[in-house]
Image (cartoon, rainbow, N blue to C red; front, side):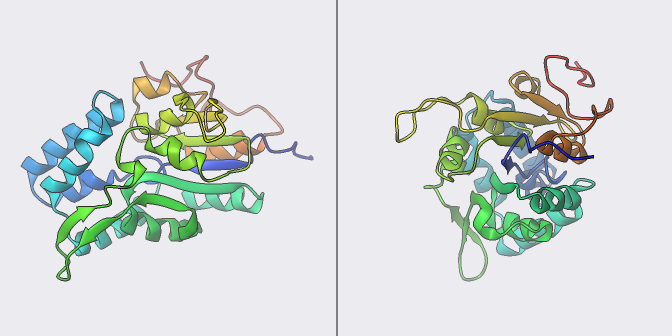
Amino acid sequence: MTRAAPRFAAVVWDVDSTLTAVEGVEWLAERRGPGVAAAVAAMTTRAMDGTAALDAVYGERLALVQPTRADVAALAAAYVAGAMPGTRDVVAVLRAAGIRQAIVSGGVRQAVVPFAASLGIADGDVHAVSLCFAADGTYTGFDTTSPLARRGGKPMVVRGLGLPRPVLAVGDGSTDAELKTDRTPGTGGESAAVVDAFAAFIGVAERRSVVAVADFVVRDLADVPALVLGAPEAPGPSAAQAPSAKRGVER
């Protein structure tokens, strides 16, 4: 059976709680004990739910955790070990079909790049926030100029990538949802969303405010190729679903 032309020409992936079950900064915080872990988890939840601006918590979380270069290397390994089932196959199928893929994450670049490489995504297609370390590997700060460390940063980065349209974004948090809801005018004065559709991934965490603005809801990354490429027959009950139906989304 001949498959129809792909519905999307490019996919923008989130990382934490999407391509991998690991939530990076929280994972790092757990290495500092339960008090730091609880404080960081609370801040992460507020940022991803959209009840607190990412700008307000990004640096504060890292200042609490003080991740070393060795911690970040361990996080990279944890990302790989925690990859969602079928992630590598999904990326490979889309790559074979000629779909452009980019990772746009507020995570730590030094951990995201090795993880992306394990999936077959080149570091040039990885956009994340770099940390700074002293010669002895201790934490000294992060790239405060990165748009990805603040609210509205993902639309800014994706707008500059020049991805072929239509574009699908896949992620779990409010910063991913911004890719569909942000209407900040581009350099040419256009005010359309920077992606054509947004799929809320709820296989790790379900955030009602994110699902509410999604075009699709995805529980299993294995359903993404059919969503991107088009399927010869209707997906089953576990497949990606339009939020208008909201089937399979617990309320």
